[in-house]
Image (cartoon, rainbow, N blue to C red):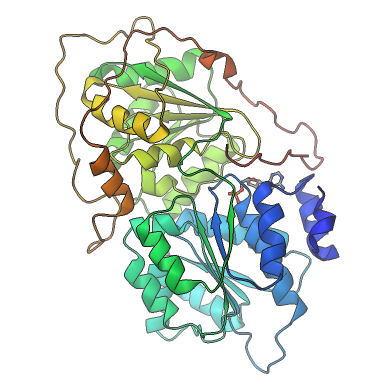
Length: 458
Ligand code: AMP
């Protein structure tokens, strides 16, 4: 199927062609015609499926076909809400990229940076606004933003927004919008909270689904390396060095852990940066840019900071520590194997984490292959210790955030008979064969990359 058949205008097709996309992804094939019709939509799609273009392209087209005729400043006609600053920035980039041949204006607003430049931008008139909920409400309370003309609302990664405790903010924002509007809700996972939100927000929505719930992409090969708690850093440095990994996203459970690991890697001679909620927005943006350019080899991140990161053709994701919430494992490994490229997800698992691994395997409904690395065999005499912070409020959640989200409920439901990992099973089942080498699949000339469409998630 080609993009030409979806009813998009010549300007949008040109912008898509500039990106080198040869065909629409499954979510784009389904979403674009629905959004063009003006219908509400409930879309089950993870990051990595091409969902951003799936809503951005038809949204741009709809705004452009009925241009604002009124006098004075252009009002905000489309509002896209995202849970994190990074995702807002990325979606903002997509809006600018796909809308480059259209006379529409857009802005991105999120917290952690000065508000005045945002106010100035809003004063100039903005058709499409991409925002995180907190800063959006700051603007509303300062009367620097009017949302009474919004025609299209997009909630991107709605599950994560609820997870981060944004439901009250979302309800406050909904109350500021006109009743008649088009609503698009994207979520990678469904739970009762999402369903309730969808029921109150959407009117006879078209439902599209491109990923089975909580199923990681087939393109990602996954392996667990059992290792002692105190030897994880050494093993990580060894793997990065010996296998010549050039671009690795590493997850830790805590901000402090991310900082410490990043410093230790630097001491090991591996260029590294940490990205998490305590870093200034400038530092986060710089770290991400350096990582994307290949100047930083290892980016160490916490779950919240990494949510929605789109790093082109990221070959390696390492779970330095398993997440407390099993669904976060799926989100983490979704950072690799994106847009049709193979990826590798490695988990370094110590004796403390056997229960967490059991929870993840139960969610995935399969055991993950285990491979002990020679020289890093776990010491059977080491006893499990309690993991700090388990059972507390999620890291990065806002004060007053609701506990008992679907994820937390499912974690609690999954508590119980945890399957211990079978340490010592050698690498088999073809896991190691799929390693992506440095620079794998990169474009070599200045020509636009011709990318194959992400297959969606299996
Ligand atoms: P998203 O799920 O929106 O975060 O997109 C994931 C990645 O897929 C991004 O890097 C996009 O640039 C890329 N992408 C989007 N649409 C296509 C397409 N039709 N063909 C190939 N890659 C695409």
